[in-house]
Length: 210
Image (cartoon, rainbow, N blue to C red):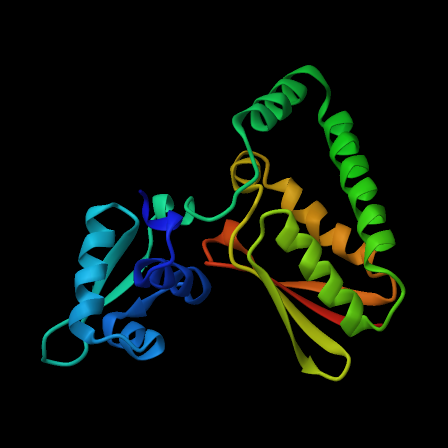
C-alpha cells in the first residue's frame, strides 16, 4: 500500500509541504504535534521513497539546518487530471495548424470553460462566487483555497496544477487560465500573484471588485 492510500503522519507531511513549499523537521513536528524523533523517521522514509528532497541551510557557525520540500514524484501523489494523450493531441495540433490557429483553438476552449464557470458559480456576492469557484477547482483535481485580504479582495491559491504536464509543454495555457477567471468574474479584476511555471510552489490570484 502506498503512502497516499492511508491517512497517516506521512500524508500529513506531504500535504503540509505541498501548501508551504518547504519546511524544517522542527516546524513539521510543531505543526503536526508529533515528536521531532518521529518526524525525522517519517522524513527519512519519505526521502527513501523519493517523495521529498532536502537541502542544507547554514545559519551561523553551528550545524546546518535541513529544509524539506516535495520532489516531482511527491507532487504527483496529489490529484492531477492530465494525461499523455492531451499533450500528444496538442502537439499534433501545433504541428498541423498555424500558430495563430493554435492560439485561436486554445482561446475558444478557455472561453467556453470560463462561461461554464460563470454560469455555475452563480450571481451571489464576490465572496460567495469565489468560494464556489474554489469548489469547482477542487472538483477538477486542484488543491485550492481562498481567503479574504480586505472586504472586497480575495486571494485564490492553488497548490497543485491539474494540467501540469500540459502547462510545461504549452505555457500559454496558464495565461488563458488567468483570462478564464476574469471572464468567470466579470465585475472583478484578477491578477496573478504566484506562478508554478516560474518555479514557485503554488499558483496565486488576487481577486478584487473593479
